[in-house]
Image (cartoon, rainbow, N blue to C red):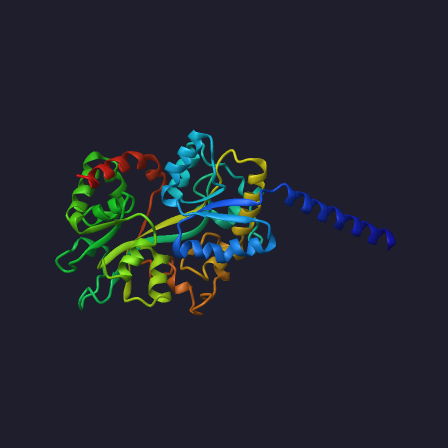
Length: 369
């Protein structure tokens, strides 16, 4: 018995010493790049603050540059001065950064936590693992919100209402990039959903989409940050606008603004982490330690208590409960809820990774014409 107690004590000391040693080899500052607003707050509450509570010496610096992540990470890499440790990006941007060698490839089953149900990370994340460099967090959608007091007695039921300025006069808000806008334009110009990307791959199809967008160009306020459209809606500056469904949840349920949600034609997307390539050992050790914690089953379920995005792990879904402050069930507010998913559009991440730079240039040129 004495030998057993001694062995246990020695083992405990060894493990404790190992933990202290590991902690000492981790950087005490970490720069996280995200999107600001309600989404970044959900990350702060769900896993950054709990992680810092366990590691009180860690300082977290936020950078709200996710919408420019590809361009800025390219520039940092060229300058030989990568200042970011963990970057939140969409799936398509993750594929681009991975293809360019700017994001680190990850052995998911080696570095991430098992699911609460015992599943391996690759089993648990399943089809959301669309790149070797991408660690998914959420399933979200880009959709439309509208001012309920500015649409008359016939609220919009179709995504194509964005192009109907006669029935719904007033300014619209659209993101200042081609993704989603080009798809909606073709869809509302009569192109079948299954043919969208084949048509958009041609110069003629790209021009068709731009011509359709041109019919409302003078009525559009272009946004770059996810918080822009909710604020424009809250201020009554636009009658309708696109943004992420979680941002609309916030302005509707948390702020109690006269805003309605239009789920029709919502574009499904994935959002998650990439780790910049070639971090120092200390920075990488801290980033990976945090990443394992922040993407486990419970933490992703906890995030859904602050914003209406579906967790990317299957094992997290049963753990999703009520809103942390409002006390309302969150499941019906998810883009994946059957009542909200009657007419979805699935973004083609690989297609956009291949065509993004060329279409970006054409879109930006069209904007200034």
